[in-house]
Length: 117
Image (cartoon, rainbow, N blue to C red; front, side, top):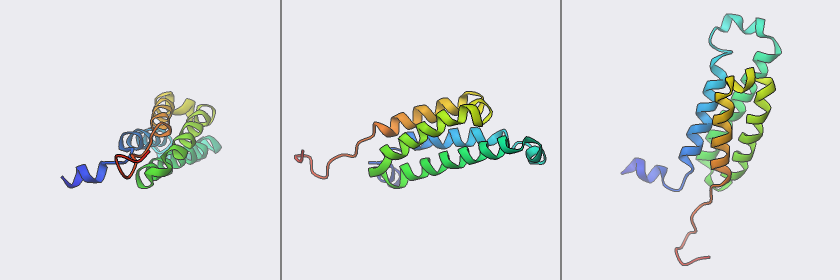
């Protein structure tokens, strides 16, 4: 009951998909932290993109009225991740970011009253 009330009215699916894309993109550079220095700026950029996606996912869930903006930011980060983050997290992370961002961009909150337009 508490979980249902907590998840109602929020783009939870979109936020979880974007958070999964952030985790997937960060998993390769952080797989062996000793190699992070060898990856150079590409490893740092991959982690920056992953951190940006994580912030977008958390923002979607905490502020559902602004989920569309976070969705567009997640889409932009997903596209940027292709050249900067190991082919967008081997295309899986990029696809998750694009799908989650599209779901969030399409999200609309329900009106406060059922008869309100």
